Image (cartoon, rainbow, N blue to C red):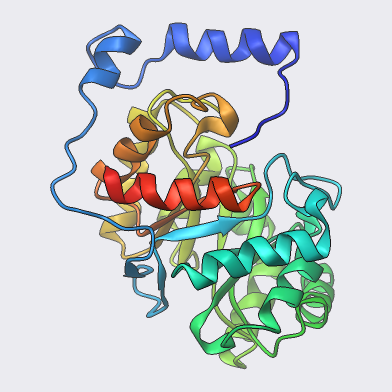
Length: 294
């Protein structure tokens, strides 16, 4: 994958992650990577998986559209509507059925273009809203369906929740999504978490049906150490939630260790699916092959 050149601050941050790296004993990063969980079966990026108890079936690998995504822009949307839609269609032609979008990535027009050329019933569309109140969520829900040009959204997430009390504070937005599910406007709802407090709250909330969780073996761009996050993921799994992994490559920190990152993600036995954003057809095809080779 292509990743932006690191700033000095980012370099020091990632170096600190690698040197601290406290996810499991023993204490050195090399030793930890040498004890990655064993992968007991063969996997494919195109495997059909079921997301928790939602009943939604899709591909194991989701096509991310938000590498360094913010301000309605990402590395993927920089490819343009035609470029990113071609990338999504290449994935579809190779068996990937999971489109991972978000308002903050600006990727709805790109996904909409790709959807014109596929069997909509075979594609899972996930998107995310920053709305934190009922009015904002209601407006986003209508706008997103219009931008995506679809009748229903398969998975609608509250994006980047960080507050440990979010399931109480954002109840209005949550109620809107619950009602939207009852009306068939969405199939399921959940959140993407960006703090360990928010992640723990999500694990305990019956409202959360799908959770996007940051996970990789070195703790890069994560909510806490991998050991801590895995313990919360086990709680989610026991509750029957759909778990989709993100930051599998640590937002580039494992750019030269893709196989180890994939082995870790697959060996956990906790992820229903995971999302990675390729930036070219060549990268996407390589990623598909790497998953099969683990």
